[in-house]
Image (tube, rainbow, N blue to C red):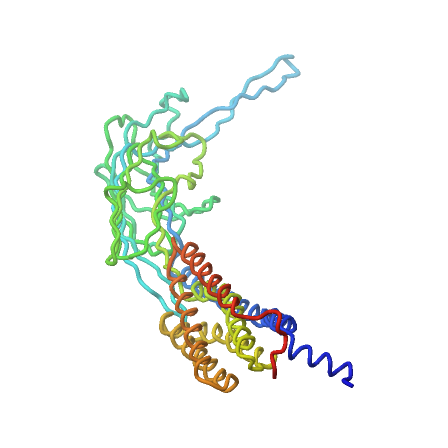
Length: 451
C-alpha cells in the first residue's frame, strides 16, 4: 500500500494539472530575479543620466537667448501729504522714483550654425554643441506717450542694451554690439530671474531718435540638449543649420514646413514669428517679464540609447520566459519525457541571464552586437541543455528554432517606434494561435505521463 507521501509524489509526476501548477509557480518565482535585472538596468540608466548632466554642466547647458532689448531709465514722482500743525494744513511733497522702460526690436534676424560634438567619460557619452549665432535687426521709435512722461524726465544718456541667456558660462567670445554707428561691449550683471543678463555700458544719447536704429552682433556659445530663442522682434526670423541628424523642433512655434530638411548629414530649419502671433507687445514699463514660455527652437535628441533599448527588451522578459517554459511543458506532456522542476528553474535562470549579458556587453559594444552575442549565448546554452534532458534531436531543434524566432521578433519590435505596438500585438496573436492548435494534440483526459 502506497504511503500518502508516495501518492502525492506520483500525482505530481503523472498529473497534467500538477505539472502546470509547478511550472506556473516556477514562472512566478523567476519574476523575482527578472525584477532585480530591471532594477539594475534602471540604476545604470540613472548613472548615465548623472554623468551626462555633469558633462553638460561643465560644457554648457540648454541655451535660451532673450534679446536684444533697449533699457531706458525714466523718472516718476509719488505725491506725499504731510500735515503741518502750525498752518493746520496739508503740505504736498514729491518723492522721485527711478523706473525703466524696455523696448523690443522692430525686426530681428537670427542665423545660427550649430556644430555638434560627442564627449565621453568612461563608458558614457554626451552630445553637446557649439553655436555660432548672428543677430541683426532694427529698433524703431522709443515711445513714452502711453505714460505721459515729460521729455526732461527721460534719462536718454543712461540707456543700455540687454541680452539675456540661460547659459552665461557657455559664452565663448566677447560680445560687441554694433548699434547705429557705435560699438558697445556687453558685460554680465546679477539678475534675480532664472536667466543671466548681459548689459552694455552707457549708450550714446538716444533723445530725438525716431528713425530705425540698426544693430548687429555675434555670439559663440557652448550648450547641450537644446538651443532656443524668444521672438522679441515685431518680425522675428530664425534660421538654424546643424550637422546633428536627430533634431526635435519644439517650443511655442514650429519651423516653416517647406523649409525644414532633415538628413543623415544634419538638418536645417527656418522660423518666422510676427507680433500678431505672440501675446505680448513691443514695450514694457517698470519691469521686464520672463517670456521663456514663448521660446522656440530645437532639441538635439539622442535616438533611443542602449539602456532604453535594454529596458524595452526586458519588458518582454515575462513573455520570453513564459513562452519558453510553456514550450518545454508541451513537449513534456506530448512526448511523456520527464522534466524535473529544478531543470525548469535552470532554464528560466538562463533566460534571465540574457538581460544581464545584454546590458553589460552593450556598455562596451553597439546594441546589435551585444544583442547577438547575448542571444547566441543563451539560446546555445538552453539548446545544449535541452538535448541532455530531452534525449533526442527533434525537440532541441524545436527549442532552438522557437527561441531564435522569439529573440528575433523582440529585436524587430524594439527597433520600431510608431509600429511597435501593432507588430507586437500581431506577433502575440500568431503565437497564441500556434499554442492553441498545438495543445489540441494533447489528450487532457489521460493523466498517465510516465517518468
